[in-house]
Image 1 (cartoon, helix red, strand yellow):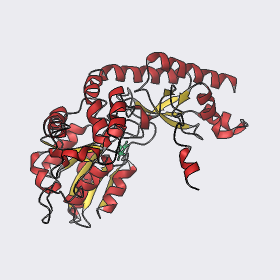
Image 2 (cartoon, rainbow, N blue to C red):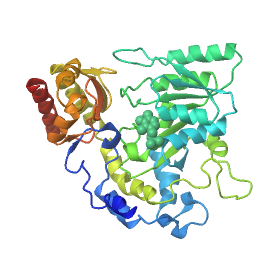
Image 3 (cartoon, rainbow, N blue to C red):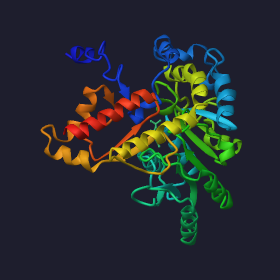
Image 4 (cartoon, helix red, strand yellow):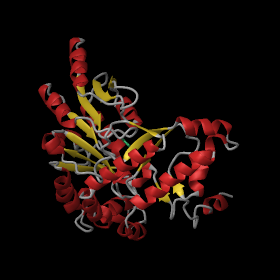
Length: 380
Ligand SMILES: *Cc1c(COP(=O)(O)O)cnc(C)c1O
């Protein structure tokens, strides 16, 4: 009875195959050929555990040990790296390890929803730093200092400062270095959420002055996922990676083991390619800025910081919204017309506001995207 419906997912050609993919969620997670092969080879459950002696990160064959202990820390300028099942799990592990119920976390208003739920699950009170509002929605990190003073004057206790870098809505890159100085001044640990950064652009947590970074393999490191990691300063290792008193090799915050399967193998298989693609980041930024300018020539406005420093962008179009109000397909017309032109990634039902990413696409493909928008605006 269940078999037939489940079988539909087998041999079903994914709709994105061969399409121009501008979905911000997917652009940095598309697998490399190497990762695709690793996916088949290591797809069986617990496949990486053949040679495990009680701790995933210590497996020498496949070379997870070297990857976690040396390669990744060097790559992001961290003292210590610990694997997680994603960025959100990293946030939860950190907040849970640091917090006592009723403590504060200070976060930016552009934070991802997973920041909220991780903090909620850890029993933290959330203090938001507002953004500048329409049209740039910038975060002024000086406001964190005001918030710290406010909480201190009310005798509240803060355990963490968090900045989303860039945020997942507008792709804004706020002044992380400056915030690190503020955090240091008040001796509050500083977590930089780099789910949209590590794997796309150069990130060095030591240079930035963060205590923690969190990364997402399936968001930005060409991995199947779910997988991510925490990069941290040495001084946090014992707190975040505290061992069970019953099982001396097992860590409490990751429930003993995190990415115990194929996801770590795709992360490692793609890694050399990820290291290479980061070198191209200045060109990625140029491409995004060019695309934004061309969209604006069509009357589609880019919100968020300008000039933009990231491939994730948020657009606004009054005209597309007006078209949707009289179009027979209503709000779905934009999604459908883009799809007909082999363009994938703008959510069905969106017309006035939508996000997209230029990360996985060539300039030629983006020219086609622009031409399609131009035609849609003209023909409707
Ligand atoms: C996508 C995203 C996340 C969630 O990543 P997971 O690895 O799936 O937990 C967290 N924060 C930001 C800013 C994101 O864009």
